[in-house]
Length: 510
Ligand SMILES: Cc1ncc(COP(=O)(O)O)c(C=O)c1O
Image (cartoon, rainbow, N blue to C red; front, side):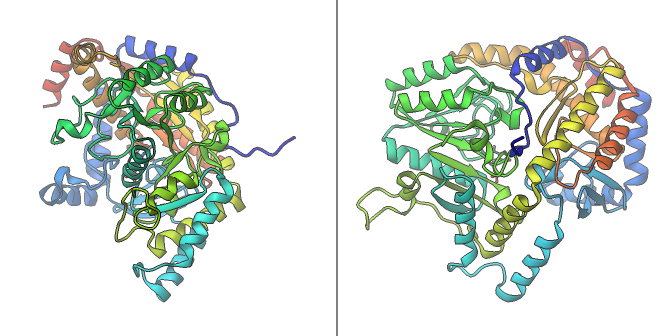
């Protein structure tokens, strides 16, 4: 039998998942009982008192009290003091199984010892930054190319956000076209032109684009996830309004697969992009070196024109991202006077600092040596299977699926609303009519996240779980036991269907 190379053993087509999600949105919210809610709050109050004091102080000095979008906020963020393998420890000494994995990059498990030791040695010798060339930068670029042949050249930058900005610039120079198409709901960082259609497909500028002048996103379009017809219609329409420079996708679907797509979507989207003269940009910030060493591009068997990398490229060490691709496109970042071509200007004082480059190079070598992608995938699939059994046992309407080491646990369907339309007014009216319900379901999702936390499990926003090499069978069994503690206290509520119920709920928690 051929050796498994990817974290995903079998791709699940979106039909079952979408119909279960649709059902989930139609039934009232199932969440922990009021008694259990009180116990959760008590856990935070009694067992997390040091965190509480720091979080209270943080509110005075840090906007929103946290620096990171993924830091869990309800009832207050826990302060993490120690990270080790599969576990995080808060400042009060409580231990948690870590399914956040810093948002994905720590696929070897947190604070991996051999890499930490090499980083320390490097710091002793060279410090974190010199501003000049360091050998590790080339080692990293070669290592990426070894696994992803389409990434012939790689330029390291400070973050995924910056790398997307660079890719869009390259696409516009290369194609001389103007517009960028993304899938609704997808996240490609927080640059002006990409904070558009976040979270809810069809939401365009209405949810998050405040403070961004309309002109910044006037050349960005969003299309419904997994809808190739809409993509082609948009590409066609764009021919008459400046042309499409790039089609950018998250390979397993928007928000790391929260909106699942069919296996063939990416290849077809690439074919359509090329048919209309656009570059195909694969945003592998989460999937690169997680779905497999050759990334999602290896898994789906395609060679994108440009690939975006994020935090994994430095193994979770500070500030890292990068953009790479075919020589003729990536090379545009070095064009200019010498070549006579326009240059896509990129930069960054800390970009490709030797510390991050070395950590990234060593991480990829270690992922290869330990077969981490496949092992993390096995852990993810075991977790998803166990969660499905629990959901059945307690007769809950929850939806569980995994894409290898990316596990989705949807308890409220808050993330599955869709207002996509080619027509602005239709999108807007669909959004407005569902807004209160979406908010109520989101509040409940956060409550479930807090319940998992109080039972020793850290998730991403209460609905996504990343597994790692450190997640042994024992860790997953332990996690399932903890999930069972939560699920056994879940009850059906009268929330989640009518805006009125939301009003009542908000009044109660006041
Ligand atoms: C798919 C995707 N693209 C881009 C980004 C932005 O990366 P960064 O946070 O490094 O700016 C993220 C961040 O999580 C992401 O998930």
